[in-house]
Image (cartoon, rainbow, N blue to C red):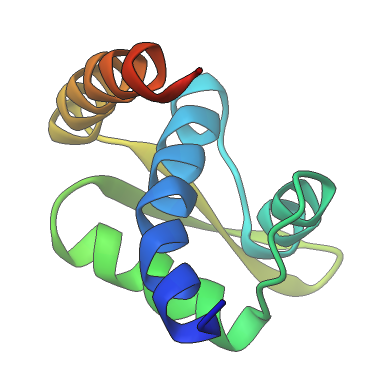
Length: 102
């Protein structure tokens, strides 16, 4: 199958995954990369970080920088808007799953 088509399709899944975890607790890029890889997503840091920045720009995530062992780490959490989007995405994903599961 065309890899570009799959990447476009999975981008939405990745964003939902990010929102889910960022709602549960503050996340950072390298942790999110590992989490996505555990679920079979083949994504690089060069792809993930622009997604995080875009989601922050769109008001879905908020960023807090913390010094961790002398290095600045950027932690992301969902905003109220991000929580609303996640809620709606869950409902839509559930409806889609029910329709395509067989």
